[in-house]
Image (cartoon, rainbow, N blue to C red; front, side, top):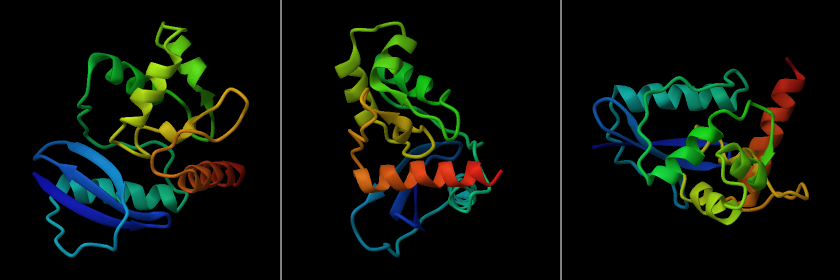
Length: 155
């Protein structure tokens, strides 16, 4: 297992990978560690995250593995279809995966997402338009949505 760290405008990101795929992209609530053990997969991922924050990348092209239940994977794969600078609701995700009544289960699956930014859980909002349910913090969710909106406005 390889571990890399990246300072982003909204905190320190930890990226884990094996020889071929990114396994997790998440935020940590600590200073930038100095024990980076990156490989080429992580280095490529870091380059793409930097480009995303610079407003130069709307879709990631990194090898990845989604590790979770069958239901979680269905939800995460659906999230991958949400376009840059678009939002959807938890209910719309539930409908999109064919289980309209699974709103709470969808929210739990989204909360278990270990590929922050890449699997765009920040693009899911409450039915009333509120920014809810981002385990990395609502300030980060707001920043990501505003970044995408401002980048797209400049296109």
